[in-house]
Image (cartoon, rainbow, N blue to C red; front, side, top):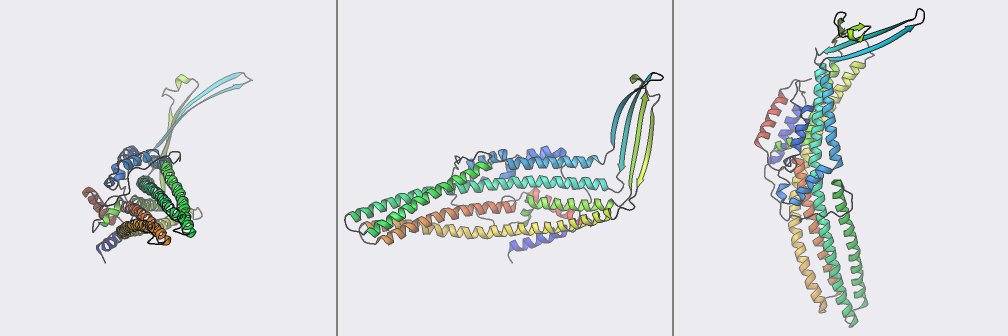
Length: 477
């Protein structure tokens, strides 16, 4: 078992142990009052790049990523959903406080016999407050806070995912452009071969079969050129849609497919996975489910509330503000559910089952994260070898094509050998562009699986250590 596997097993055991407990106090989750400050920090470019985009040294790509993050409709929608979740937490928090309402009413009454008209004005103030004796209301507020944190991490995950989609789409457009350029060079090469073969045919040095084979390959290359052009336009339109623009296929990606990528460090710390927004969101969903399970259980207990009212009545508006005739009352209530057909008990059991299900979902999310990292590392090694060998194959095939064209012109080889060498040169060059793009896209997926680049700040490591210690010290439901 290698070092990565050992780290994976260690973190899995720690995380799954944490799943068996639920926090009984607020984990300092950001509330709606901090939504603006969190959003401001998210707008910082480091939240997205975190090193993995900067190392590509492609300023045009980085600038385009910023534009997409500013204009993408789906991302803006998620940002608004996060704000809504923050306001929902504010609603839950308001239930912990007393509620106060005031009202004023006016009535005018007339009787015919005797003819009397009377006015009646009243001013009232009502207050109510449910005492959170068992912590049911505070538990509901904590569940709403966890929901807000889920929305926050979902937004961060969407931000990172969108940046990765843009980068992958950028390199796909670059590959499509280079494939289109290769297809044009191929058409030119086949046109040159067709002229040589036609010249030999006119001189009686080759058969009509040779000319027909050359014409067939030329037309097939022209058809492939048209297909490559369509693929290029499609890649450009995809980038434009991500940026919230009309898909006119006018956007052009700048730069080229990188020939070299930095080496993946040996012995990556498994704690890097803690940065993944989807893992953080899954953890907060687990907390929310646990809090709701607690809340449902506490609903079986008595509730205590205070209600009060005060007011004044008068025939004249000016007398309403006098305190001579003011009246008030204060009432305390204790309410205990007695019989509801098992509704509260079944609700509590349902929430407990949802909590247990959320534990399994968290474990599945964690295992999926480990699989994505392992797949990314394995594929990175494989594609590195593919790029190296395909580059050598393409270089040899291009050289062979040049030799074959010269030898056919001198009548040393037949047309089949010439056309085979041309097809081989095209295939290897096209394959080289493809594997280069697949390698950079896989590297982006690996960074996405790790939640960022290959480094981990010391303060983040300390935070993770403190969090894991706190999780393991929490009491069971």
